[in-house]
Length: 157
Length: 345
Image 1 (cartoon, chains in turn green, red):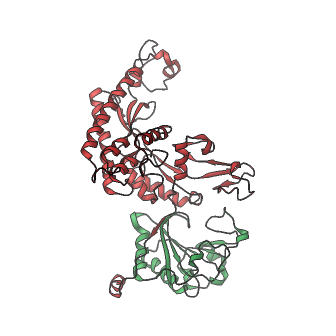
Image 2: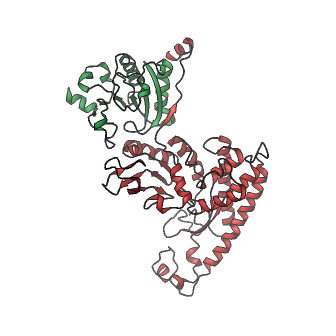
């Protein structure tokens, strides 16, 4: 899996102050996608031990508690799934209190049996649909997308 | 307001007193004269700068004493309401023929400071958000003003305080004067306004925590009044957890007065509010003229900023960079196998 961008002290992607990791490669190709430059899975740097430790360090830099947001691209695309799972498992292992959110274009019902669900605290699901675009919904681009937090995982199962 | 030397039990009391008169020092012209910005020298002439800066401090003290003299010699009957109702806090009873000195001596005479960023760019070519050298020099200026105020308080047995000036019209008029005098100098006089006090310039793209950290150094020394602010975008304003963390961080840095700026646009046709692009309202398509844009400018939130403030402040609002979009991190390149395996262990 390749990591295209890392943004720290991000206040616009998820609750609290966050480190946002953008993975590359996306099969959905939604119309008017926010990040079409990340559709190509070859963009960016291969996920390595260096990058994992860099992310871990960023999460605690300046003694501020940050959350981790994984966006893309499609973090759960078949060629990204192992890498994303490894990233989440690594962070939860080293820093169990870090809040992890994941943005995916798949429907929650398609992914709810994946191993990665055990390591994330929030999921925003669904493709971006231009006609349902709204500026009001927090953390989402269009109103069809839904937010699942750890609590609702249990409810839906 | 700084410390009240006439109230030794509660020197930090803020109620019933205030700043009586400010005198703002704007050392931008000194920066241009002794700095590298005009290409006359390779290193700034800091000795020359300090020589003239001391002169400005003395002039500030003199001018404040003249004004204090006028203020203190007024009689209480000039403002009956104020002194009968004890709006100004004091133990003195109302006496129409007595002067107001005994009441107003608790207030302070303040030496303000404006245009720190422009001064530093003129001197060093970089401001305090970009260079440690510039940041340390600005700290020396802030410390000197603070010390001078303490000295002046002793000399005159009055309250002098150091003040971070949030100039309103001055920021525009003085900039125009500097432009006429020195012409356009890159980074110094190429914009329409002077940067407030010790603030990081509005156009500088900086992380919210770095900004708070840097400005807190100077705010501690501006005891007679200061502010720090952060520029939020519309999404971040709804991120309550993040706002709480930012406030906690500012408090840990000893910022006494912290403000958030966020854009609030309102469509006068359909009532939609949020950040509205200049192309028109996203809900009803009303044109730009129908949109009211409210912004916090020098602490005031008034009508549409494009009609309420001078040209300098309007330009300042347009130059503002959001501090909430985060910072792009340079991803560590995959190094050779040896080093990455070391890291994994």
